[in-house]
Image (tube, rainbow, N blue to C red; front, side, top):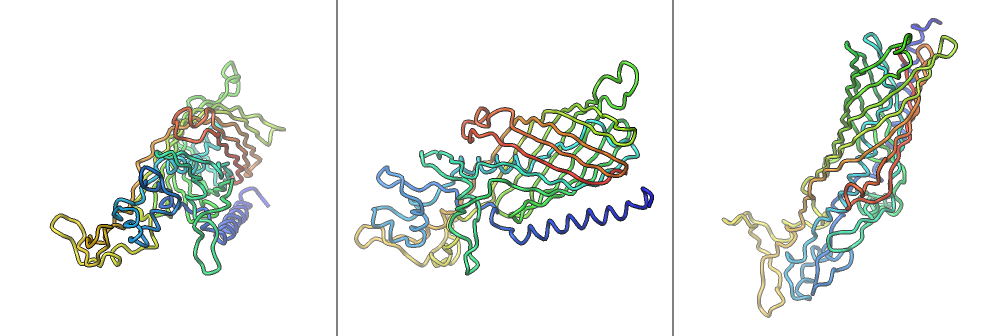
Length: 382
């Protein structure tokens, strides 16, 4: 069977491999889905921060506020912006462009179709310190966790994954003048999240094999972007700018092995939607909502005691439990090294990517533990 005749077969095998991965992954989807609405700070009573679940308990039973001489809307949940920032930073590291390629492009007539599997270490038991001094295990509180027999998720994820797997189908096409364009779509294991994005590279120096320039490595600069879909609770986009050098080594005039090394500056942009920190409580039903007042406040028929004899107020405190996190803007410095192997149509690759600097050296709110990503790739080169 000739090289070109084997293309359909290899493409069929590759697509079947992708499908099997996605099917197997979907069976476990959900446990690591982000739940940022759980990342909240508890109110203070008499200057003392209350324990976990207090604001949620007040929302469910507003009469508890009168017992401490306060109103329900004074005991609302508030967003833990530091915990959210740490969650976004580590998730963004895992979903960012991997730069898994050599500096040399495929060439104007070249095309690569491949599947990449990446595994990123996260601080599964990492702890953030909120503005009020409280400590939060942001992966425990910020992801769904296991499913109970009745189909509901637990109140926290007691055993979050320490590795985030991302399986990406990629297509690379060489363009004139040393440019190359990549497209990527990926699935994030144990979640309902997908990533989509594209990369653009320019090989400043490539292809010299003889003469003095033949001793120089190929050099390229590039940029890539990834964004997520599958969550209505948060928005996450990552942008990478990288520079790398590589040198192909021909083996027996047939196979080519290409080691490469480089640097990437990563920018992470995270935002939240408006979230309900007390999803188990229906604010409109609780207040007896009949519409809006002229001031814009909800008009409620239900009342709640204030703690003062005979005095009541509208039971509208749960409306204050709708929260939004501060936008997250983070920059990470990453190094990477890897190798690709090509034999006829077969294309393989492996890469190790890592933090060059501690995250909290750039932002003191972030966990100090450095992250890393191990990636493997297989596909066909036309």
